[in-house]
Length: 74
Image (cartoon, rainbow, N blue to C red; front, side, top):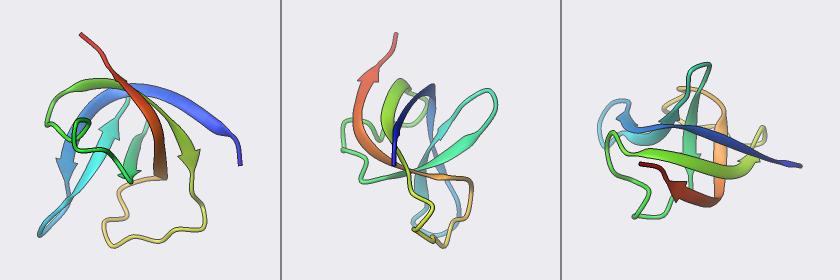
């Protein structure tokens, strides 16, 4: 599996407790193993991680992106 880097806006999505997502211009990624510092609504960030095709989630809002690193953008 290879890493990708995408930039977008962090948002809380889904029902119940919800899940954290990174919304880009073209895709919404469900964030897996996202650090607390990344999980802030409407924060802009650049996230590097791996798309996990082997993980199923209840939210089903888009590809699951396992977070390896991130950078908060201004």
